[in-house]
Length: 424
Ligand SMILES: O=C(O)C(=O)C[C@]1(C(=O)O)C=C[C@@H](O)C=C1
Image (cartoon, rainbow, N blue to C red; front, side):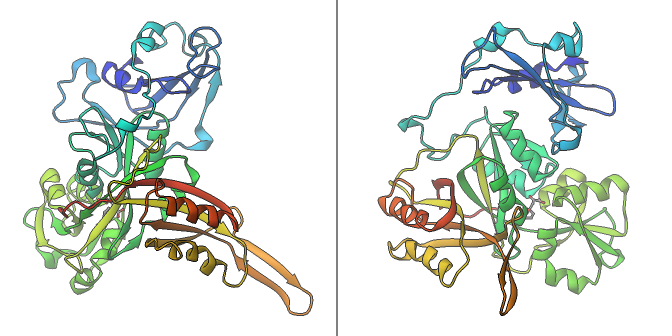
């Protein structure tokens, strides 16, 4: 086990809770471990520091083709996988005791010389949100996925970091492995990506922006394969849903996989002649597939909205169009949802999206009525996006009003609306 210098420097970002360094093993099964130094008090190091080892990354490592292989490390990129709670090991104590004297630990001087997180200031506002090559941005999927393109649109010149699942992308931001995550939330044809609604509530990241991407699907297959030879088509369930009519015409079986580019990669890796993938033209190029149909989606206006997530919120402003996303719960009763939505209508605030999700911690409320039996109500979380900034007094008053009768209310983020021209 040796420390990967490239990854370490990046991962060694100080945060209020400490520092992290990464250990990467070079032999299969490739694993990564993160070592956290956790000060007792915010901003304090030295004595009083506790060390916490956390198997947070169970990463499959893929070797980049451009790798020079220096030391065997720099060419490896972790594909982040969600942490399996059951396999998490958290040990307290000195790193030497945990890993022996070969512990891949960076000295305190190295840690201290790194820049500390900058507090938010009024000049720091995201217009557009902090761009630049220094940002590492997590997305779900493998290179060629639409989410990778969305990350590049949101943060041009960023380093896009592939993650196996949505949850891994959330964790990567929380663990300071990356700076941001860009994740899909809804599509104009396929509807909401429910998993990400649920994860927004389970994690404590903030929405700092949105980006809309035109999705142009292609039917891909191995070179030389004809449409008629295909028995099945694999892709992300959203992509399959967006190509419902085209796929029905083809008369093939459909199979869902984690992401569109992953489907293309799978066909190429296994040389599957009877299988096609719904994915981007870029995925065809990366994995050496041919485009059999260019534009397979049911409607040309196929747009996916992605959220940009960060550890800290941005300061809302009023000099450009802003959106605010909230989640709340209500008591059961006639007209309560109407009342909740009226707080916005009364102030002329436009709602752009409403989504309800089951409250998984308390999905049912049983009300006993001795005369009529017992009624079982489903309990919901309501997610609402509205067109106003939290710096706008109308939004503040609307949420103050909502708070009077909501049983729970959380602002997920107040962020600039994507008003840029659409591009794929
Ligand atoms: O599979 C991909 O390429 C993704 O980026 C995921 C995803 C999604 O989850 O909706 C993103 C955009 C398209 O709507 C299809 C799939």
